[in-house]
Length: 556
Ligand code: ATP
Ligand code: MG
Image (cartoon, rainbow, N blue to C red; front, side, top):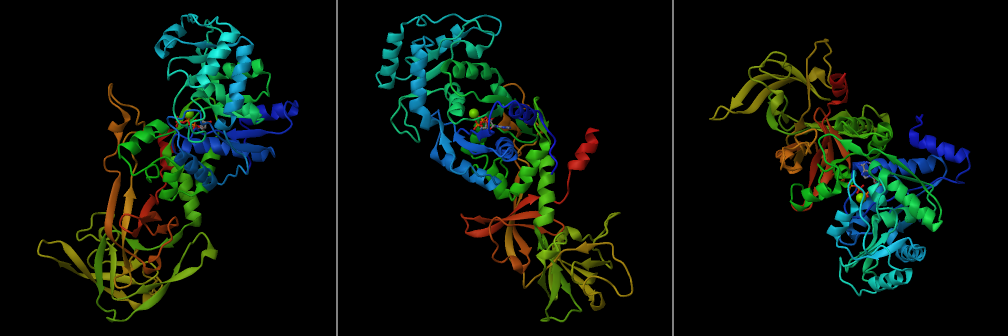
């Protein structure tokens, strides 16, 4: 695939031409405080693909500096998701917490240089002293402590002599800097909390700002690619690196991925999980990678999407239909076709001998000859979709109605000759006749029908449960809410429909979870196992209709 050169690759090319670095080395640095979402996929693809293109390496580094929100569960889920996306960090699985000792020593170095001090202002006071965008901040009364005093206090902080929140270590930079990040930022805080990896070894923890750049440096990262909100932190990271005289990574910022009809922040996704708006992080409606996997999205489609959206310096919102377009494109090539009837209507073929059966040949995937064919059983009682029949057909309804002929896919032409109703007037059954000469789907006399229906044989089919998932939010931008409201107001209260008595062709009697099929005329469906009820279910991955082009036209 021809790749267009984006601004990130331009910067890297220049660095390499000028000999700034010998080899390209990137990293993906998740914080293990939630599951990965499609936005992370963009960052993962970017970092791993760049490493591949430049014959370099990409590390996986967990930025685990906040013990109160991080958990081992998230570490495992993140590794699984990156592997599923198709990327390999080999033996380079790192943790910022591995560097706690080194980061501590670096802090000591900064104190020794007179560039850091222990401050006893409260969090609120620190905020007040910081000033605003238009006004300079005020210097902390603790700013001019001696190096020795700072060393002693910082050591005591580490030794656990002070309770949470009583003091912090701050870098001594410039309280009048126009960049608020440079106004003596906090680099260590006291937290008597166990860490998922270091246990109770530490009661002081580095801030993200103190840990991130130096972790990159320690790992020899050449290009530290991150999202735009870190642009204003770059001068700070550079200041740390220069004061410490350590390897200088180049930070490059790009715009986050935003998608319509979804939220992407882990904090909001956690809200959905904790309040049971969804059935866990891997609910098929979630924009998480585990949710998309469960929904049946192929990882190849997600990768293609990430490459195609490209990278930019300005924020924008990508239409979710664009992602769905890649999902359909991939599944159209790879998913085998099957027949299933969601809302079954019984059809008795009165001229087909009762007790007779035959097997008809069906193509597994018209897009892939190597997928071969399968046999599907036919008999005198079949099911078709309820809405493929209309007693009083409206204009342009070309499917089955009384005295009209249609084709049954891979089988015969049938013609409806009678309608059976129950005492409430509901249609319970159709009587049809079939034409034996049309076996396989064409009439030797050349007569045409206007519709082809999917169907299953009653006695051979299995009963199954199908789940139709819809968008999780009703608004393109779920964050658009009236004052005082929050994004949960825009949740789609009807985003899951369960259909219990679907009829499915017998080849799917023991389906393997994770495989996606196209149910003819209905959409793509992924096999899942319902552990609560101990039976397989089919989750709708996508409908057949690609909305992408329509959306493009509307926008023009
Ligand atoms: P969130 O706001 O969802 O919690 P985060 O940025 O705090 O996301 P991290 O675990 O810190 O999540 O992110 C790991 C990497 O993924 C970072 O380099 C971050 O910039 C990148 N990333 C996160 N969200 C997106 C997004 N929507 N688009 C592109 N990259 C993203
Ligand atoms: Mg973060």
